[in-house]
Image (cartoon, rainbow, N blue to C red; front, side, top):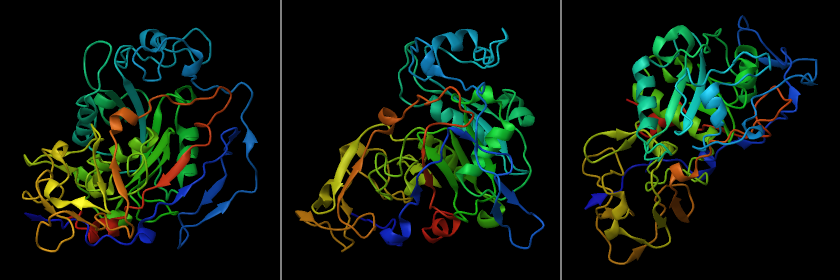
Length: 403
């Protein structure tokens, strides 16, 4: 018999609710001076620039995979591009050399360009772990192999991850997702729009100080903000790996509860869950899993939970807490009364102040590879939803997720 202890310090739903906001208008390009930042100021501040957004030039183009034909592996990159490369500007020269980068028309490929502020780029070993996580996903490909080929581009920072992009950028306090979009416009090859995800390793962003990141949902841009201002100088590799995969998951259409934003579900074994983002999903063999959920797990009905069933037989191999005794498929004292009750009990297991049905989707069956690019626009995708990561450094420390 195990006490269900994780998350007892979780704040109320109002304190944890996600700041989900509407996206911006992609049919207009962001002017270079849409915001101004004064690093010499005693308090960092942003002032809207006087100029207004202006439409992209008529000859502005973005990679539009929907305009091409066959895509055998369903990764959003046409077979012809993965075999021959893509001539963005029609000059007879390949601009996106997918075959040289290792793309395979018969296996899912995912490309991410990474810009970074000084001393904030993930280490090569951390990037190795991220790539290996995607390679190990139980996703079948037309060529008979499994996994997803994740191609990371850090430029010349690491020869292993140099696809010709990726830059060190000046230190700055980001403001929000629009700042990330502007940095993409300033630093990334426009030929990559619509295919490459773009991210920034930064210190923090002012719209949610202390947040670990921000991302477009079903979009192409995200940021990981684990800098020293709020997270200190000794951020663990687990935190870097988990947060990167978490924010990229939002780009792939995933929410903090999988298909909803109900957080801290003990039965949702995914890096998208704040419960597991920082340290990974704990396994009974002592290892940690840093990926998306690979199957649909049993729903927990908080109005009628049967403690003797634990989190269900299909949770075998996982722990529900960072304690070797907290076996997920064993009986669990959900209501913390010191015993395993007979019959159904009613309790708020994720401590969000509400009783409901906690679902746990199969993330891999839900992720969306198709980037919705639009010819004629310089910037990103059509009206993406944006989610701010409300898992701050202080919250992580309160929940015992940081050392």
